[in-house]
Image (cartoon, rainbow, N blue to C red; front, side, top):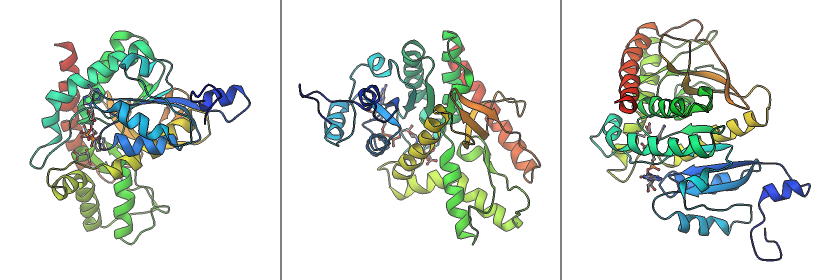
Length: 322
Ligand SMILES: NC(=O)c1ccc[n+]([C@@H]2O[C@H](COP(=O)([O-])OP(=O)(O)OC[C@H]3O[C@@H](n4cnc5c(N)ncnc54)[C@H](O)[C@@H]3O)[C@@H](O)[C@H]2O)c1
Ligand SMILES: O=C(O)C[C@H](O)C(=O)O
């Protein structure tokens, strides 16, 4: 959309002129494998009025490219200016896994990157909802939370670790079991990947074999893709799809739509751990209501996941406190 002087008219300007309302959003790590399709899809979302793209490489190229899509957008080259006034930030910045690596192997590089970006958020948009995707999510969420605690400006419930790819995979694999995902309620709780646990809710139930199949496919879904791409990347398009779904739910929460419920790794009191992935109801400031686990079919697996999660959380917290 163009105004007479040739500059881009964003949807925020449209709002002032009686056009559709929207939120301001930033993607950090926008020139990467997930970032590019995500940027394209968010640019098409009617709830987004302004989209800022930030990366340490090629952000101007991606910005120039998608700015030719005939919807409102602008790119920003400095981290703080990219974040100023933003309602929703998606963090994808960092490195990804190659075959033979675990997610934990990414910690040494991604921990520092996530810290720097979160320091920027604490200064420039402390009220923003943050969707953190950079791995290892079970470590980067505690890092981000410690940074925000230092700034003392952010509500812990604004920080949402994106574990929804586990749920998307679960919906996919449930179909392979011959079930309709709309008719079974299987929240994936715990954390991301190896420590996620699908917990089937009554009245639906799985056989032992079905539970084994589902759990293994979900927990190893990322590795399946990393190995299939033979070093070219990890889950990219399925993650961009998932990131859009989760961001859309957050935007609907910001708009205060009723009944927006998704699974996310968030500051929580449902277990003795300070962070845990469960279903939450999204609202203006992120996770408005955190759902209890309820009756569990997976107690033993969950206890094992909690032990591993506790170690990840501790390592993330120590990274900031050291
Ligand atoms: N949570 C999940 O379910 C999930 C799923 C898939 C991937 N991931 C993770 O998401 C991250 C991104 O994956 P990808 O496939 O897009 O990787 P990628 O390597 O293609 O892209 C990462 C981008 O981050 C940028 N970057 C690096 N340091 C930066 C910094 N300091 N500031 C801004 N940008 C910076 C890079 O330039 C690159 O463009 C990885 O850590 C990956 O493991 C998580
Ligand atoms: O497997 C990875 O490294 C990326 C992501 O965590 C996934 O589950 O696909």
